[in-house]
Image 1: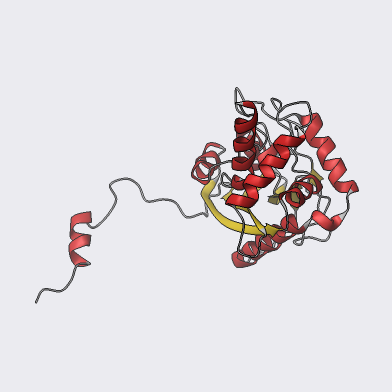
Image 2: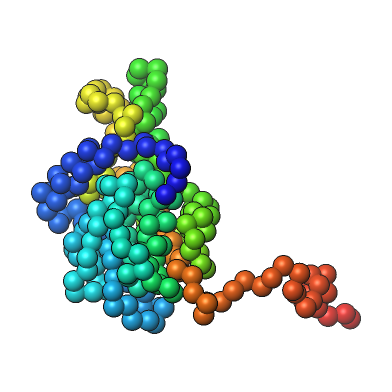
Length: 276
């Protein structure tokens, strides 16, 4: 685990948000279910059978389509308590953006994998809810001359490959999708975020309810700046996918430095236009 993780999330509030989400039913599960489908497609492309999977996130199989019964572990604890070299597949579907010590979690996931086992995860990325963040900051700044952070910070895709390497994964890959969802009103979006368990759980969040005039001003700004022609507002969800393998001698190795058989200059010349 990392030596000094930055604890920015309130674990108690996060768990409360997730329990409330579960009580609100499956109406708000669309995004996690969609990403589960996309993760399943990625697994099918690998063309390999996984027989001992683990789901980090605690969805208890609701969105898990790669095994009929899969053990799960919650991400609320710093120590996941995973047995080493036990699983051939570890997945995590839209939970890692709530982990205080993400490098430490990745290290534990890697240790839990058997040699040549696969880690596949999806988390919300940096451009997620950019419209809502802008609207809330602008409204609060205009009405009270300052602003609180009411949307959590999200990871940057450029950092995730490095985190996988630091955690000891081989062949790390990080890429992303952007999904745009429309709503009839900003309040509908905020209700959906609560139903998804994605309400603000920052340790430094304001502990009082947002003033009604600030909320209404934020909705006005949102509708003004981020509406389609039909009047519906847009909400961006950036999804970062990360994959890495527990090292094994059979895996492809990067070429050693200086082992190239052709100079870059010659390669560029060879690929240039033919001489007249």
